[in-house]
Length: 92
Image (cartoon, rainbow, N blue to C red; front, side):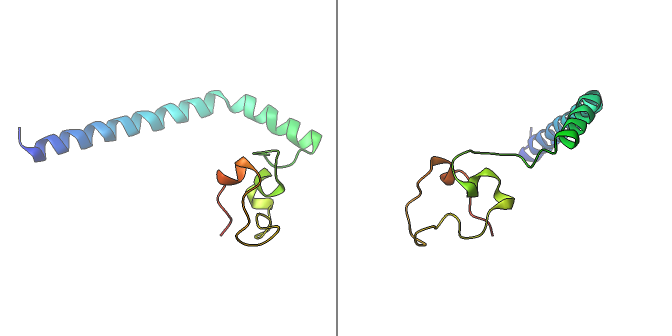
């Protein structure tokens, strides 16, 4: 078997796996639709806010809600006080 044939076989296998994963995701989304709608109604009824990723620092709770310099409260080269700050990159 030539290397090009092996590469083509690998490419076809990966494409088949990708198509199977997409079909599975579509089926799961259809199956979970009633539960998702119920949760959306609960969020609307309770007026819940965005997702809270971490509870430590305000700039790690939800990255879209943080100001640009919240991580550098003292100065730009200050050490990180919270472990979750090393998991969430700074906003661009």
